[in-house]
Length: 308
Image (tube, rainbow, N blue to C red; front, side, top):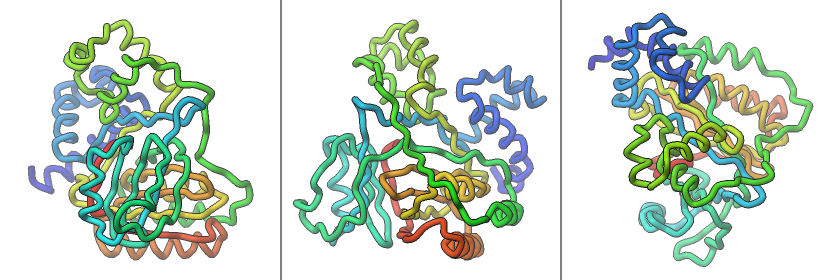
């Protein structure tokens, strides 16, 4: 499909995404009712959005609980690419990112691990318990309008905040965890083949999905120009004002990803060109001047694997 055709369809793509962001399980007929877009068009556009990597998910992000934690590690290794490859299939590693900058390997794990014993290890910027992942809601498709809105939101932060929240308990058994691992990349995936493969009854799935919001965030991601056309930057802010940073950086016209880990906030943003990068860095300098953070580490993401 040509870029001109995609550009013409973007407003409708965005309307459909907004419906799915608001209600991850919303049926197509309800999207039609809420948007005025015909059902056949909604069905076709949803398929196109997935094929063009304009929309991802909705994805499931489990909250920390007394009986379940994840850990984030921002690591620097001497030989980053071979090390990144070796972490494929590594026990308890849920997500890995290869990047170039202040760290070169980001790992999200289900157990706390000592990486200093591994070959080529040089430095760990931070390792700690990871909060639940938050995805921003994309409300604007225009870069300059988004930047103006972000600057207008700037004022010295006062109330300390974090995105970390811990729930008492995740009551899942083997079947519920099996459902999570199969649906975590897209809760709208076809249900019956997965239930058959996992040997889970539909009634059990129905109860699980109905109660899922109590133990997880469920968010769709939106990249208006297709994720493959963006370059991705990770920022690790040492800050006492995580929610305020996420609120401002979440105004970008493509999905931004956030989570808290200790005194740090991870912000993953997607940009299209040098102008956007320059604009964003100018904003970040302003955020520092206003006192939003005391230290900032940054990398450019080269490759990622995993869903958290």
